[in-house]
Image (cartoon, rainbow, N blue to C red; front, side, top):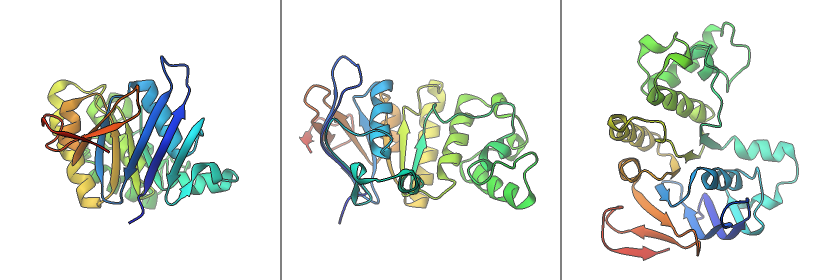
Length: 238
C-alpha cells in the first residue's frame, strides 16, 4: 500500500548546528508514530517540509502520492494542506475569544457571534477533543495548557484531515497532565482511525500517544524504531 507520507534522502539547511537530515521515513494510512530526536526548530522545519510550505535542498517529500515539489500553484497547495492537520504553538489561538469561537474559525470567520449551525459544528469538535462543556463559552486565554492543546487539536481536526502532524505537543504541559492527555488523544486518534506523526522530545508522551516510537539520528538522518517501544532494548533501522 502506498504510504500517506514518504521522505527520502532529505537534507534541509535551516541555520542550525547541522542540516536537518532524514534518510527514510514513511507513514501509512493507519500509522500513529512518534519521532524523537528533533528540537523545536527542527520539528517546525520538518512540519513545513511535510506540508510543502518549504522544499528540501535535497531529497523528496511525497505526500498523498505526489511530490511536494510538483505543487504548481497556491490553489493546489491549499488543497493539499486541507488534508493535513498541524497541531503547533504556531497555530495562533485568539485568547479573548471563546473556545467555541476559536473552534469555529476553520469553518468561517463570521464568528461574532457564530450562527447556530456554526456553533453546533464547533461544539461537536469541543466534545470530541474532551473539552468540558463548562469551558465552551470561556475565553481560550483562561484555559490551562492542556485545554489549549485540545483546542488546537480540535482546529486541526475540523476539516477531517488524513494525517495529523504534531510539533512538541507536551512542551507546555505539567508533568501530571502528560500521561492522561496523551492517552486521551491516542484514544481519539484510534476512534477516527487517522494517521499521525508526533514530533516530541518527551519519551513519556511518545510512548503513551503512539503505537510506535522512532528516533532520528540527527547526524546521519537514519531513523530507528524500538521493537518494544522507547524503553525496549532491541532496535532496528528503517
